Amino acid sequence: MARLFGTDGIRGVANRDLTPELAMAVGRGLVATLGRGDAPYLIARDTRLSGEMLTSALVAGICAGGGDVDRAGILPTPAMAYLVRQLHRPCGVVLSASHNPIEDNGIKVFGPDGFKLPDEVEDRVEAAARAGGERPVGTAVGRAADFENAEELYLEHLTSLGLHPLAGLRLAVDCAYGAAYRVAPRMWRALGADVIPIHDEPDGARINVACGSTHLRPLVEAVRAHHADVGFAHDGDADRVIAVDERGEIVDGDLIMAIAARDLAAAGRLRGGLVVATVMSNLGLEHLLAAHTIRLERARVGDRYVLDRMQDLGASLGGEQSGHIIFLDEATTGDGLLTALHLADVMRRSGQPLSALAGGFQRFPQVLHNVVVGDRDRWEADRDVRAAIDAAQTRLADRGRLLVRASGTEPLVRVMVEARDAAEAEAVAAAVADVIAARYGTGRVAPAGTGGANG
Image (cartoon, rainbow, N blue to C red):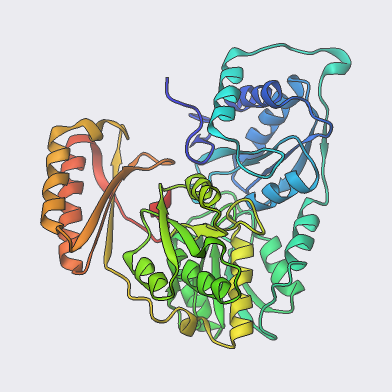
């Protein structure tokens, strides 16, 4: 039986894979594993159409297990990570599938320390959910209520960090019709910025559709049309951000980490003198950081693996090319709004535009092919696929690198090639992807949009 929890909680097509029955069972499993606690559980969601259905089921499951629960409404995932610790709640849950398509949804669970649950605790929750367990009755049944000021508390937290934009900064922010639709524009206005919000409605039918951090053209056009100093694009639950400079050029997670790392190092605040990225981060990042005597360590793809590596090494900064950046001295998970604040603050203190701060990055051409498959695991033991991978690695030699891996959140096998020569990178990636597609594909190769490589 496949493990219920993946690299970023439970995720699947809502009402088919992630059903109300499953959500209710998970709610009961959480209470059976984590206990009722001295305060109510806290639940929030993004704007997806299936969010209300699954929230109702999860609330019912927690109450059926004897736990009390507060509904916090629509809220970014990092807001939950902050609030569950700040309010001393036994558990916080977000119903969201992040950057995934609108038909998907997910269950992300945070413990009382603000971190996502360890694998072993997730396994216990899953076992309890499958087992069923006791059914309290009478006064032992849990109660549910609405928690009205969750967004206010999160907003107060962000605006109290001392990170401020340039006076009169004009910025565009793409809220992806998701969880940041209201709080992101509010945050920037509270700090005195001139804000041009786009896709800032709570429209669960359009979340992530041709907008947000995986579809940057609307933000690029808004920055240029409004002569903005900078643009920020979030995903559906706002745990990541991709920036656009004043010229309309994209500043991805690798560049964001480079800018932040140099700034923190200059202030003596880059713990360990290192940055933790993933195997997907460009070789150019490694070279740029090395030029500033900053070490790059790589982890498996997935913010939980980046975080684990950061904690092992005592690092304060890490993240993914997709814009999921962790400032561990200030947050327990990636926070797109916090990351955007950091960039604006560096612009203010340096007096430089984002284009100048992002300069000097020599990016190695990187090609990504996403092969849609029916089974994400069988390819690894396939002789033909292994032969294609071996041939590709031999061809690249020391001129580049190849990474083939299954997505942790979607039915994809990702083939990434990085090389000095773009044509060679494309040819090598296509050769491997074609073999996987022929053996296990569903008839097409999905386009690899910006930021989609990290799920």
